[in-house]
Length: 68
Image (tube, rainbow, N blue to C red; front, side, top):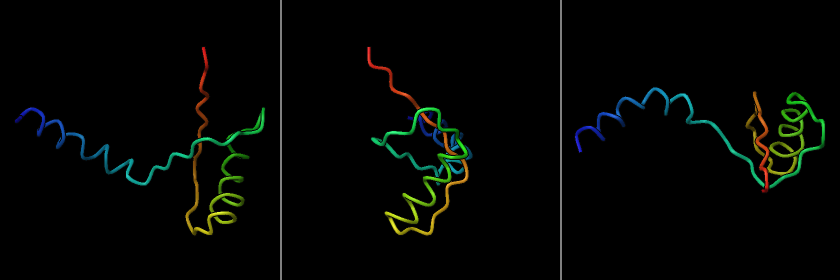
C-alpha cells in the first residue's frame, strides 16, 4: 500500500503535464496528411466547427492501428 501511494505521488508531475491531453478516435485521416494539416483540421473543422469549442490543438500525432 505504501509503495503504491509513493508511486502515485511520484507520478504527479507527469499527471500534471498530461492533464489537458485529448484523444480523438475513430476518424480517418487523409493518406499522406502531415501533422500540421491534422492540427489545422482538428482546430477548424472538428473543435471550432462541429463541436463549437474554444479549445485549440497545438500538437497532434497519429497512431495507426495495425490489424493482423
